Length: 384
Ligand code: MG
Image (tube, rainbow, N blue to C red; front, side):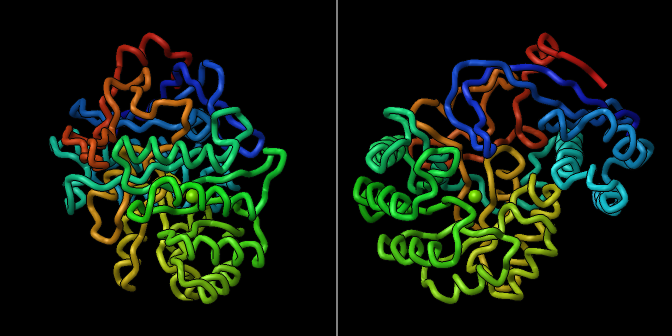
């Protein structure tokens, strides 16, 4: 089934999120943001889609690499197409990133699901039809009544439990917050949440990512006492040695790597150096759904779980198709924002959660996104 066209629609939509100088999102005044819709069309008229930042599918990338690899190829040959793009990354002088690869590969999976009228997680090999979600908070802030104090985290955690969440992950304070980073404040927030929700809710911590070994060990020892389920990315992931040292010195599971490049190769190295107790990969970070599945299977081979990073339809599809994870990451959440609100460019959200804290895998063909094409058409800024 030959690919005849690859195109990108850039459109705008309203958002109440703003991004700080470290790239972390927080609640903000309503503004408009831009989004890209990648579209792959085959000779039979079937289409596949992926949403992403317009910069990840900018015209030069599409012309210089993506169309050259895709057009004329069989859209079912995902692995060959992906390998060709991955091999071009080195020679692209850093322009063709794992995130761009991931969007192309997601659109190919979405295309296949739509073509075969199957949800992608069933094509991958369905393992479950629903999964528990943990509520993943935004990073701490200095907004009154937001996530400015340990007590704010405690109060928000109570609301999340009332909504149905059986797990909560804290992202604590990071610069540019004036008092961050502060290991003692991180521990206070964790203690406030444990106090608020009691012993039966799973809790995880994902704090500042640039602590030194001493601070990471201190925080790990404290949240170990609080019965936390895992400790995520407290140090730079480029230092696998530091994580091996931390994992050796803690009983709480250390989870990673999340933001480290290197796809499944770097994850294999972390398993080899015993740098984590639970492996980590997300579809965007490792270059697509298939490489994310490779990481999950690598973990399974070593008797490890692989918790999938990030929300959205593609990560949910992976969670639905592997045995060795326990959670879907739902968020990011904040007391001022309503996660269940449907973005203007969709007709419904891809990850609805029931009152018992389960997200049900979408059953529509493809990745499961219920796209509002009329909205996108009416708000398109450019097409290439
Ligand atoms: Mg994380």
